[in-house]
Length: 542
Image 1 (spheres, rainbow, N blue to C red):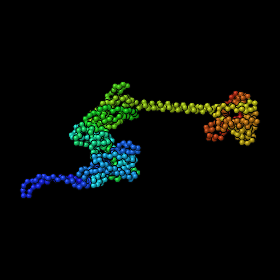
Image 2 (cartoon, rainbow, N blue to C red):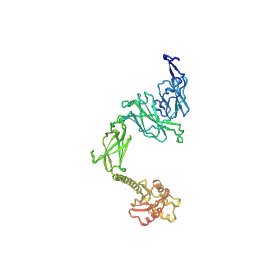
Image 3 (cartoon, rainbow, N blue to C red):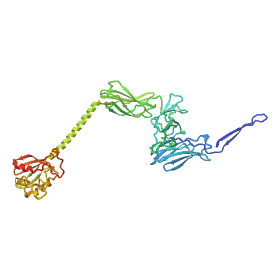
Image 4 (cartoon, rainbow, N blue to C red):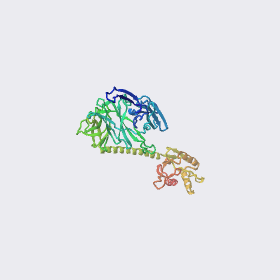
């Protein structure tokens, strides 16, 4: 083989008989050649790490050294090729430390990269390895969840029992990684090794030489998931050769079987739901130190109490299977107070219980009655509010305006800006006398106006213009609703109100139209009936 050291041991035997000669040793190294293989990489043999620079993504790349029988001579350097596929730029990074099997890369967070490796001798370099595709940050696949590693003390030889939750259907494989633990969780003191398992696998037993209960914490075990890449436009799977990975996710805990949980889960909150006769619970997950063995579930123990902390009935329990942190306690009886406590459970038994918590599960009908009472009170308050608003409007509508005319002069005494008289204006000089009340009139109506003028129920001709102007300025065409006309000399007045035109079949008048009025009350001294009749005939009619 090229680049290989060979040793020959030579001894001679005479052809005609005799003895073997002493052994002569010859050492020869064959000519060096380029490596027959590349440093081995895997689609998931990288780890996401922190990057101290701005707009930077840290990736720690791992590879395996070229096997000795494929090196074809001493390896002098490694080459790491990093291609930014978004801009088509490739960077060649040279590694000259032959004991190094990892390299930290600083990448753009939003770009896609392909990474390859190559090994070189003094003669030349090997071909490039298969590429690793690193998806943009936040767009790649997530690692498997609920990943646990437990050393099985009751099995020979000792092995790690590894479990995880499956991902979606695009997964093509899962990969288990291991190495000896270094100073931190991202470095290893031995080269990284891995094995690939089928996509329908959720459990794997890893046997390592020299593994024992005492050396368990010296190891690091991780997992990755590999999936077929999808098109960013169609969201369909692309070429099967385009595989990307979640990268390595290290197990935070290396458990040892045969132990019970060392602490109780801390209950965060409980919420009762009378409509379903259930209680929703949530607790804090136990840490690695609190669960020396893998947690198989959380046991919820509860009973009914009457005000105190003593159960009035038998304790019951339900099991929240798995390593979740929430559970819904079902099939309860409403109208009771429950005392609830929880504990962690492993294959070896139950851990300590948490402090008991009391939760009221009110009767559903009582809750409904409470809701109805609250809704009724709110509706009543809303009704009272509208009644107050409506009453204020009616008070404003009934505010009075008195018109008095001592000594043949018209005076307007406005007491409220929200009251109005029917204000119209003469359309011609022939209808000037009734301009305050009508737009026009016949000769007979003008004669009646003169009669009202003489009885002081209409302004005289000499004050007509002033009265009309003051009526318009003080009242305006849009005010209304109640007014008084009267004589301060006779201490008499008439109360006039508008007619609701809608109630008698008329549409609502426009802003410039005169409302219809009627006399609703006479105050003070009696006014002759004929004068009232004449005045009434001059009011706008519906």
